[in-house]
Length: 165
Image 1 (tube, rainbow, N blue to C red):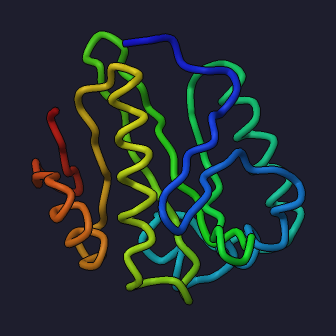
Image 2 (image 1 turned 180 degrees about the vertical axis):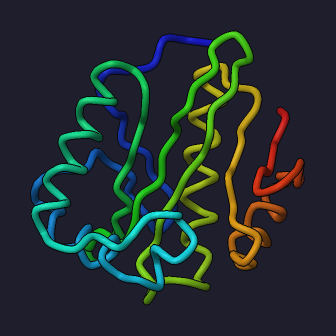
């Protein structure tokens, strides 16, 4: 596995720009992470206030700096609007694996945007030498299960889905 970058590269898909998150994204991130419907399957409470986003952004920056997480903001190329996040974390260097996680604003569900974002992140993971990707998906989160199965992830046990490449 290649060393993880300390600066996040920009990734492009037909409809999305995947780029580093910043303070300019605070309101959009709060709309996503503060939405109980979006957070329902994450295992965390919705963000109670905008200040929580500042803590999140500081954590994202710190984890990138120490090589523990890569987290992109998903921006609609057409409008420039941030609509979600997608990232790689929980790296296992010897096993050449990482966990893939994502969040999408509710009003963009069902449009194929997350599949587009995941494809770009998965391709980049391959460039880094990551051969196994994991996804932790709650049993009740049927849309995410269907999405990851379409992307060739296979259910392992409990909430764990796996892709070997």
